[in-house]
Amino acid sequence: MWKLLPFSTPIINILEGMVDSCRDPVIPIVGSIVYCDIAFGYAEHSGVYIGNNQIIHLNGKGDIEAVSPQGFMSNTTALNIYVSCNGLYPVGGEFVAVMAQSKLYESIRYNVLLENCHIFTSGCLGGDFSNAHSFMWMLKDEAKKCIQATTWRQWDSNHY
Image (cartoon, rainbow, N blue to C red; front, top):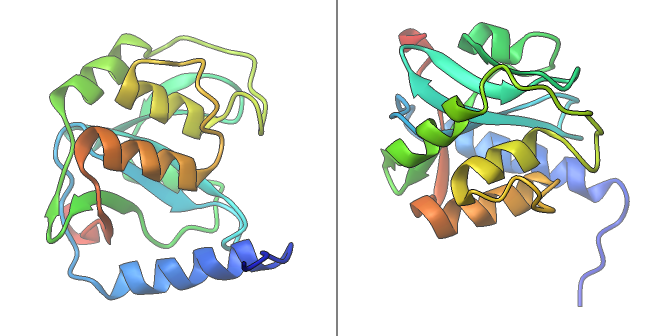
């Protein structure tokens, strides 16, 4: 059995990002899950695309807000935003966007491990905002289960 070394997770994240960047870019649909790197592959930031170039996310202050793609990537190391896809095509769900919009302007006590953006985004997928999906791999598993997200592709930056 493989044992991950402490430095291996960022390396895996960087390699996954390189593979995702080589795929044809897409434009998210309403309810797509989106994410970007925030610390050179050591961590990611996630949210829900709701249309009209708006992403609802939980920011580092604990506020749930709607931002542009540029706002979503501000204060990060991100060069790209990645979109939930099934094969070649973006996937999402109206129910995901509605769930995110229902939480807009709420505030929570933010904690990088126990109340973070991935927990919020996963809650939009499954309806359980007290879930324990605090890591990106957990959110990806939930996205696969709820909206059949099997791949992640770069958001076509010509469209934001």
